[in-house]
Amino acid sequence: MKTFLARLLVTAIGIPLTITSIFLGDKDFFFVMVLVTVVLMANEFSDMAGEKEYLKWSSIVTAVAAYMVAYASITDGFEQIILCLAGATIIFLGAEVLSKKLWVERDNPLRLILYLGVLSAFLAAIRAIPGDTIVLGFQTGIGSILVLDFLCVVWAMDIFAYLIGRKIESPHLCPEISAGKTIGGSIAGFAVAVIVAALFAFVLHKPSLVIIGPVVGILGQIGDLVESLLKRKFGVKDSGTLFPGHGGMLDRLDSVIYSAPVVYFLFRLIGF
Image 1 (cartoon, rainbow, N blue to C red):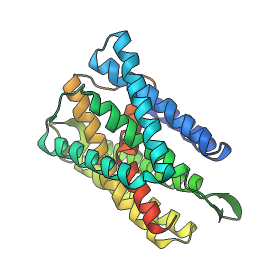
Image 2: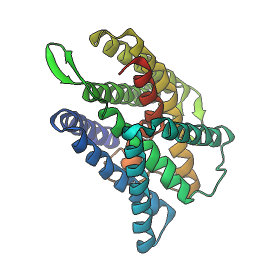
Image 3: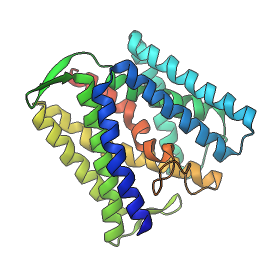
Image 4: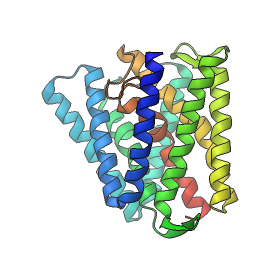
């Protein structure tokens, strides 16, 4: 019960703050916001790996550099190259989940560069998509509303997968990797992701945006398992203690960063 209340409190505070940061700041502000999360995730990764202090700072700098280079490449016209790199990373990490084992060392620097650096850059790149639009009578940036669309689908998926998974008894989804995730919760999370994506598609008068729902409903949950496998190999329950009841920053963003490149690609393919 205490864990549930802690999760509820963090959610009630964190979601409004995140939405505020999306709309009040420009794309550069959001870029810095994501950069801060990369620093926190790299720090948590280093702590899980048991790195000494001087190695920890090296890991953080490596992840930040990868993030900045990837973001600059995406926004300066080299998005196809970074998308291919991100796609290969997503396939590789997903294959590790399917095989239930890590194919390279858990603390290999490539995990910092590709997993935390390159994949995270696509979240900031979504916010940087240019243009304005009218939503419910208000003018706002296209990038802002697309980030909100993406995050709301992920949040809804996570919340309902957690709640339904707790309330309805069903077989575990992947007990070898995560003892808490159930098939019932996974189905509920997927269904709600589709519904929320459909609502955004209706509000934005863009039916093709419905595709974001099933994509996030699948990739987001795989991303959760990617991080769960990593934590299991490191021998820890959570990536950190930053958010009571939720764990660390990486625990909160595992679904987001894993699915962000594909969501960015779909937004661009749709015509944004």
